[in-house]
Amino acid sequence: MLRWKDIIYYAKYGNPEPYHRVDFTEQEWAQKLSPAQYTVMRQKGTEPPYRNAYCKVFEPGTYLCAACGSLLFNASEKYRAISGWPSFTQPATKAAIKYSFDDSHHMQRIEACCNVCDSHLGHVFQDGPEPYGLRYCINSVCLTKL
Image (cartoon, rainbow, N blue to C red; front, side, top):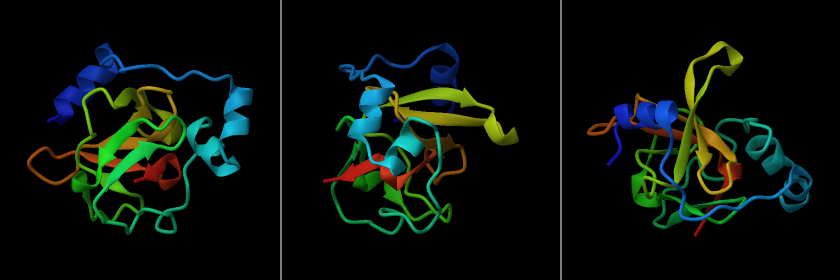
């Protein structure tokens, strides 16, 4: 299981290798994704809080990347946070998420991207529940639930 020190290490020194890569041109991504998905996933936007598809969904299942179909999270790691976006304590695998430092909007955060297609998903914070203390704050538009 990942801890905050692991996230910082990956952001600073490099992420685990993905199991495979999915690469498209930006024009191909624009055709493949909905306008909302493209704005968030390729242009690093954010969807409105609380009024998104998976904020209040807690049924069993898995969450895949809406862009490439890669497994990102298991529903068993989802919890009720007051952030306004779906929140998870751990990714499905160590290699599911790519981490990088994000200093945009006058904040210091760790960006969470799909490690297979580099699509922006959201951010990870160190204010999650114990025992690991991680909160993956993910935009619903980036996810497909199975």
